[in-house]
Image (cartoon, rainbow, N blue to C red; front, top):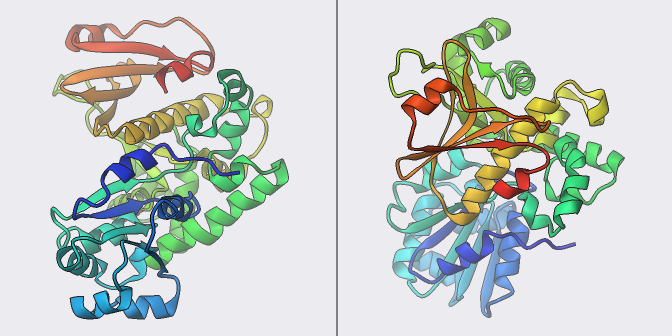
Length: 371
C-alpha cells in the first residue's frame, strides 16, 4: 500500500530552480519510494543507485564533461544513497553549475556523512529536506482509527514496513532495522571503535526517555570519558536515531540550564533496543512513551510545514517543569504532556517570566488537535 508523503509537495515546489535537492533520512523510511514517485511525473529521467559499484565509479572524481557524458541530456537525475560517493558535494556542484536545465535529486541515509561532503561545495546551490518515518496523519486514518491504533504506534512506531505488518513481523523488522542498519551503519560510517559502548549507551538512553540525561552519569555507567559519550550521542543524532532537547534558560537563577533530554525518532526502534514489545497494560513506561511520541510527531508536523523552530524543555531547581516548548518568532508555545486526562496549570514561575506564551495540556484524547 503506497502512502503519499506530505513533504512531497514542498519538495516538488523546489524542482528546476537551478539547485540540487538533498533528501536525508534513516534507512528504510521510504526515501527511494518517494523519489521514484516524483520520477514518474517526468519524462527523460535517470535513476542511479549508488549501492552499485559501477555507479559509484561513474560518479566519483569525474570532470563535468565526464559526468554529463555519462548522464546524457536527462531532465531529472536521481542519485540514491549518495553518501557512498566520495566527494559527492563536488560532483553535485559540477552538475548544478554545468547542466542548469537538469534537476538533480540526491538521497542519503546519514546526515553527518552526507552533509559534511556537500555543505561547502553546494553553498547556495541546494535545497535540503529530512524524511523521518511516517507522520501519523500520513496514514489516512480517521481520528477514531488513529486513537484506536495508538497503542500499536507507541509500541511499533512508524517505519513503513512495520505499519502494515503483523505483530510478529513487526518485531522482526524492527530488530533487523536496529541491528542490521542503524547500528551497523553508525559503526561503519563513523568508524566507532567500541561497539559494546555504543550498544550500552543506546540501552541507557532508551531507558531514560522523558528524563534528564547526565553525560557524567552516562560516562561513569559506561566506563568511558564524558567526551566519548558526547561524541557518540552526537553521532546517534546525526544518524537520525535520537533527538536532543535542550533546556530553556534565560539566565533566571531558578532555571536548570545545563541538562538535556533525549528522545528517539522512532519508538519501534526504541522498544527493539530494550526488547520490550509488551502491550500498554503490561508496561510501566507509558508516560515516557507518549511524551516521546507526541514530541516527535510534532517535529514531523513542523518539518512538513517547513517550520524551522527552536525546541526546549523547561525546569526549575524546585522541579517545576514544562515538557516541551516551541519557540516561534520570539513567542513560546508550551506543552505539558500527560497520558491520562488530568487538569494542570502552568507553573507559577513560567507564568511570571514567560507571559508572552501559550500553554496546552496534551493527552491521549486531544493530541490530534496539535498535530
